[in-house]
Image (cartoon, rainbow, N blue to C red; front, side, top):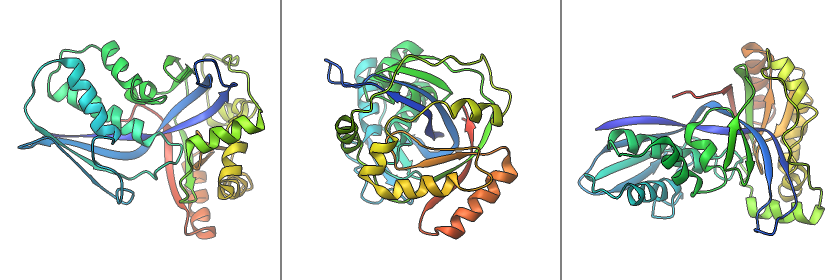
Length: 293
């Protein structure tokens, strides 16, 4: 038993967020896509349950019961209600922490998929999605890692419009951004958005067409994220000013920004230039779409 799954970076192509509801949550509407790059999770035989975390962003990351991978495994086994042989999980953490890329939720989704299949657990997709949704707002969407429109708390999913595979560049200033802090600032600013899904075509034929439509959408958390961590604003401004960029936006609550490009040549040129401009930033050229694994 040794299998590996990609836990891809999640990108919020748009993120509309409403005012705090009586249930204590902000309603949202978001079009999510997934990158062909992310963390890697490996399931292997072991004498006792264990989770090991490695990779460039693994240092200092909790590998105990509070890690979302461990929580996902424990929640899945509790829901399955059957004993299983001991297993180990190894997480290669390639995505920055607290970066607006859904890293923890995507790691959890990869764990759920791997464990159900390898351990042959008798759970259908709906039951597995219920476990994922219980792990956090991005949990349900990150389980399948395919383009999706998320509403409500992020747990009400519907198919996304047809999306082309889009070349893009992800940039993070290596500054973790606290999601609770961003939401506190968002409430202070009180710039709440409409969360009814915007009219959209059934499919987008090109990156240029998609970027044009996205340009009239928003990330309602963008201003709050920049207030909490001003270097996010520097990244966004830099990307927006480059000729290859069709659209630049913050993903999630920050601090990663993304730029959509017309093709791989443009994305490669943009990534190389950003690395030269700001060598301390984390930069990755990716393709957006999914699923990739």
